[in-house]
Amino acid sequence: MCNYQVTLAIFKPDLVARPVSLNLVCRMIEKEGLSIVCRKTLRLSLKEAEKFYEEHNGRFYFERLTTYMQSSDINGVILGGEDAIKRWRRLMGPTKPCIAKRDSPASIRGRFGLCDTQNSVHGSDSVENAMKEINLIFPEFCWKEWLRSLK
Ligand code: ADP
Ligand code: MG
Image (cartoon, rainbow, N blue to C red; front, side, top):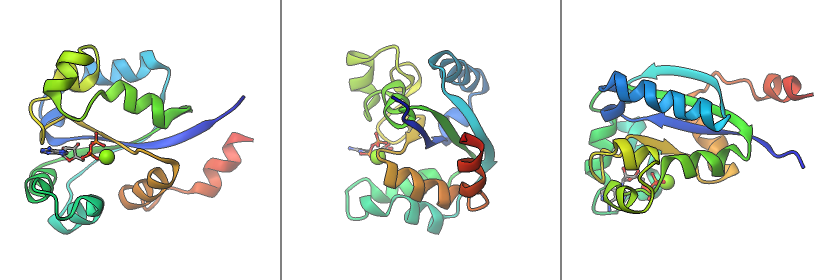
């Protein structure tokens, strides 16, 4: 069965600020067998961060999260591979680093997460959201070309 997918990963500001940890995360991605299809450094505006996390608008942490995400550079990454969405989320670990450290200490958030807001990485949670998020962070990504490259 072939279920090749792309997903959007973000290396959040706390991870980008720690190059040694960032390199270790790239090694974990490689070891997992996921490929980095595109990667770029960017800085979101507050508006872009609010749009990206619009599903969370109204939650108690929304302002903290969006302010954090526009506070400095992030890396946008398109990951590709068999079941990439689920596999990247498994590699990320639970949302809260304290839970990740307890239940999944070898995951990215278990190893590198600092707190509930500064939890190092983002990953799309469905095919639909992966498409939406890739389009937001990589408006230049050419889906047609990518589909052609799979044939
Ligand atoms: P995930 O990033 O694992 O998909 P969510 O989609 O639930 O998690 O939340 C999006 C982001 O919002 C999280 O990665 C985290 O940075 C932040 N967040 C979620 N829950 C909390 C919380 N209880 N307190 C602070 N920040 C939170
Ligand atoms: Mg989420």
